[in-house]
Amino acid sequence: ERDKAFDFKLPDVEANWSTILKPLFPYRQKMIALEGLAMTSALADVSTNNHNAGTSHALTGAKMLYPGGFSREGGGGDTSVDQLIADHIADPKRLKSLYYTSGGWSPIFRGQAEQSGLGNLSRAYDKLFPVSSTGDKTTDLIKKRRQKALAMLSGEYKKVVTQVSGDDRKKIENHWQTMSELEQQIGFRSTAGSMCTARPAMNPGATATDHAKMFEAWGKIVAAALSCDMSRVAVMTNGGLNSQDAVSLLDVHTDLHLDIAHNATPQNPEAFTKMTNYYKLLATDFAAILKSFDAVTVDGGKTLLDQTVCVWLCELACGPHDLHDILAVVVGGGSFTTFNMGRYIKYPEINPNPRGGTQLGPAHNKLLVSLMQSFGMTNNTIGMTKAGTGGKYDLDGPLPMLKA
Image (cartoon, rainbow, N blue to C red; front, side):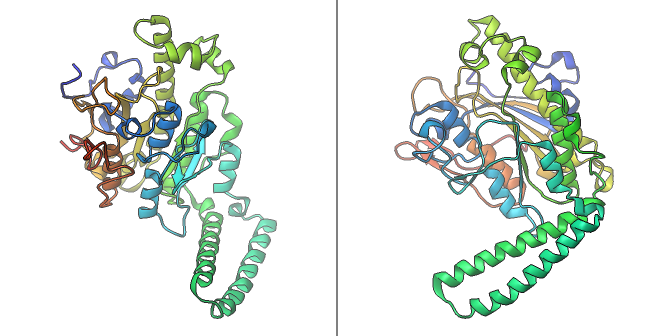
């Protein structure tokens, strides 16, 4: 019943869970599954390829930038929620945020600049835990030389900055601030890397032989960084499957995108079932990351997962590329967020659609606002705040029922 609201406790019997969400059953007491959200901001934007629209709006809720994105059909138009939260909670001596990816388009934007994610497990490991953190004499010598070079530049900076004014002085000051922050971050990684109790025992790239293991390895890297306060925000994007993985993991021997996703409707049961199994695989990957978080004990006997907010959000609602009835899952510490966990919430879909047709549930912008507010931010909007003539479509404010 699309026009009805439902709010119930997640079942304690695994057999009662849907195929897609079943991999998340172990985290039922720490999660909220949300049904009925709509990417209203994208529907109220210029009509384009919904992959572009969904990727651009998923974490920004902002009007797309043209030309931009794939085939110049629209790209992110404002800063994404992860970057806004990082700006609020980051320590300048640490890494402001981490962005890892297994492929695909980037949903991360700073201003209107698309951010690039790191897709190599070995490189990600080495950047967080440089050789100098092990006490290697050669790299320690290099670090000392870099410090001397920065000290020399500091003296030059102090001489030059007093001789310029206006925009030139501001540019020099901003550049030096950036250099100083990089120096602090490099020094911190060199010392904290060896002290990090959650540091994986080995470079996890060597054991990443399948999807679940690969995402568990990424989870271990992120868990180490967060638990050691190397960073406080991280994003992981799942780029989907290559043709070989589609065959071995989903028994799909044709084009997963064109032949399966585009036709995954109840009227096409074979494609519908295979698409369901694809989303189940995504849930399994998400669960692998959560497992890594839940394995790290932090203050007061709690796990890292208890003190983290993890969100699974897709750029499309379903295989046929709709932007309404989007699934979102929030997992983590209820006391930290003040969210009431352990529930399945179905929102009523009663709002008008900017493009006509199917009515919509609450705008997903509201979920992004709720996430910002859970970190103590006072923001009541993100991206587009109102859409349509006279602000007909409500995009601002937090998502209701999360704290009920």
